[in-house]
Amino acid sequence: MNKDQVRGAANEAVGEAKKQVGKLTGDTSREVGGTAQEIKGKVQEKVGDVKESAREADKGDVDSR
View 1 (cartoon, helix red, strand yellow):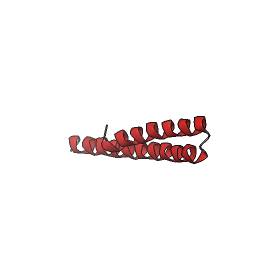
View 2 (cartoon, helix red, strand yellow):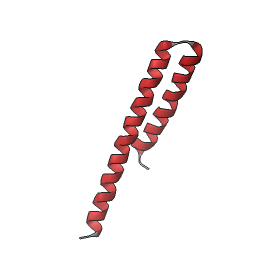
View 3 (cartoon, helix red, strand yellow):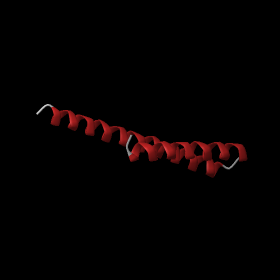
View 4 (cartoon, helix red, strand yellow):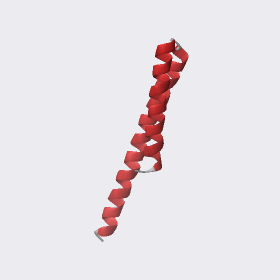
């Protein structure tokens, strides 16, 4: 697990919490901000997944030489 995956998961969790607080309090702005942060976290986590896959593929290429 790389830092993008960890940060992405953290952003996703915080965004979900903010979204729920916004829903409970009727604060649309907080709800939208939470949704945006949750999406940011998902994207960041996927970037981390791609980096990890590339690293693994590169490692495989080095081993096969």
